[in-house]
Structure formats: C-alpha cells, structure tokens
Length: 251
Ligand code: PEP
Image 1 (tube, rainbow, N blue to C red):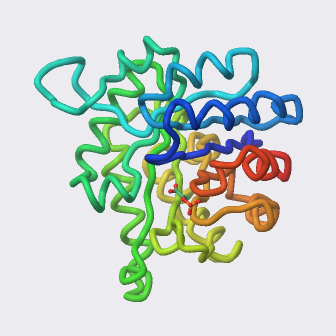
Image 2 (spheres, rainbow, N blue to C red):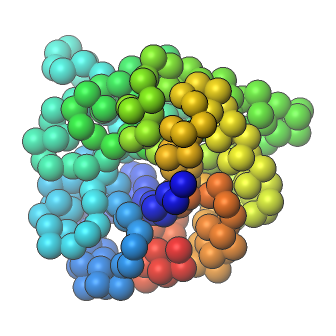
C-alpha cells in the first residue's frame, strides 16, 4: 500500500502576524517545487487566517496546533473544530508532547480532540512518543502503544485511515538529537502493528506515521527512506522557508 508522504511544519509559539508574512511569502514563492507530497504548515491561531489567505493558490495546507472537543461553551482559551473549519483550516496537531508536558494533556483528552476533529472534517495529526527516561527504562513500545490505543480509541477503520500519527521521541524534540533512521523505523513498524491490532492490517497500511524530532534538510532523506516513515513533523526547521522546502523536496 503506497502512502503519500506528508510533511507538516509545527511553528509552535513563534512568528507574530507581521513576522509570518515573510515566511509565508517564501513558502508561496517556492510552492511550485512541491512534487507528489502532502505539505502543511501549522502556525499559531493568530496567523491561521493569514496563512490560509497567503497559501490559497498553493498546494500547501494549513493546520492548527490544537482543537477543543466541545462545539462551543465555557472553555476559556480554547478553540473549537468549527472555528477552525470556518477559517478553512485543513488539519490539526493533537497531543503534542509540549501540550502533554506543560498543559496537562492526557490520552483521554487527545481522544476527545481527535474525535471532534474528525467529526468536523479536519485531518488530525496525533502525536505520540517516549521521554528519555522511558526509553532508557526500556518502556518505549509500552508508552507509544498506550498513547496510540487510548488516543484513537473508539474510531472506526474509515476514521482511523484519515488520521496521521506523529512519532516524536520527546528526547529528540528541539534538542538536535535525532533518532537514527533504524531506531525510528523500529518504532514506526511497531506502531503499524499496534494499528493493525486495532483496525486491521488493511487500514494500518493506509495510516501515515510521521517522524518528528530534529528532522532537518541533512537528515530527512535518510529518515524518509525507511519503509514505515511516511513523512515528518518539523519544528525548528519549519521556521525557515528554505529549510522546510528542502525537507519537502528531499521526500
Ligand atoms: C516538534 O515539536 O514537533 C518537533 C519535531 O520539533 P523539532 O523539529 O524542533 O525537534
């Protein structure tokens, strides 16, 4: 089953609207270089509308970095899936390790957010990954299995096929330490087996699993050449149009 490579840029809490203009212009100018690859950028909420407008005539999709599960209501600081759809946002990152670490995100809330995103027609990018302590304790498989099973609980195979999983070892995010292609491939293959157990082998063969953690132009090709690595979730290197597009073209 051929899976189309999917590269997404997570800007995190970077770029004011004014600062984003240059990056968006750079992406737009080079969008013609994008081949048979799905590409998305995920700016902060304040820049979502501007990014949708700036990238309108390009194949680059726009994603948010979180979404709430309720349609509306007393949830100060949160944004609903309908609000994102209104802006013509395409996808949404859910359960990033920074949300889990600093903002109390749990597997249960990841599951609620994922269901709300799917119900609204957004493509969820659901993040899983182990900390350094968990890896050193030999718990990597157990951790990513629990996160995946709980995060995607209750989905039917058709819904699951739409989800992208991002495997992001927490120790590799923003640290310059990248999992070796073999280390990443081993976890991706393991995750594919977990997904097969949940949804059947055919659906598991359709679900894209991105790698995230210090992916850069000079290591992307080798990571993306692994059979179960279907793309990347890119943090730091997504803040420069040249670097981000170099990763896209190396796919
Ligand atoms: C991320 O935060 O999703 C990420 C992969 O960051 P970086 O590429 O900077 O490690």
